[in-house]
Length: 154
Image 1 (cartoon, helix red, strand yellow):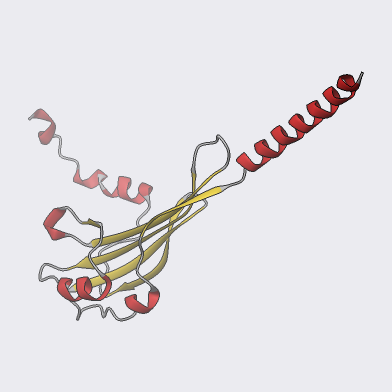
Image 2 (cartoon, helix red, strand yellow):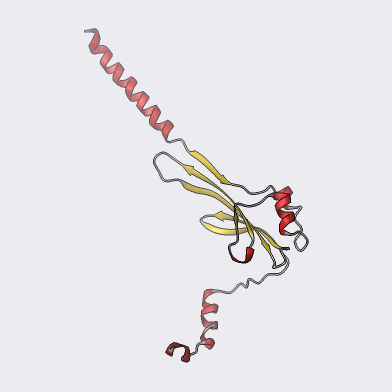
């Protein structure tokens, strides 16, 4: 007679423990990857004056650098959130790009972020910019005059 009263209590206790474990398993977990130097260190870099060696000395060597012509330095930091069994989701990403000219002098320091899935510039220090604000349609129509049918024949 005493065992019949314990069975529903034990069942509720096990159900409560399983519910508590499932709620705890759904707590978000965060993972940080990469490194971005602090703003105080970046403020010490002077565009047009500092060189590749002085940047390495002041803020360190990045994990990623440009592949072509000893291109710029790229410091990348991201933060991912995982909830339960769902795939990890990037919730924050920041890229610091330091560009150098052929002599190894800093020409540009840019900071990019990730807002609503779009890469946006957060800050930019540029001496000269070769980037033009040209739309896709303008680029397409601008190439119409450069068409050479003789090039198609091979």
